[in-house]
Image (tube, rainbow, N blue to C red):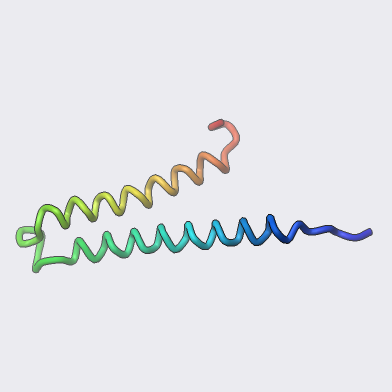
Length: 75
């Protein structure tokens, strides 16, 4: 009895997971960096705050999409 592995599909899943991880971590890091701009919240440009919230929203959307894919009752 042997187990056949579809290496092409395995590499595809690995590549997509790696790319998604890098994109989400980069987005979160950029969001933190944008929030760190300026001495405090009063001196931070509004565009930096808005950009940070957009970066955090990308992470939240990725988590919610992952939950959607994992939990069968959602689809």
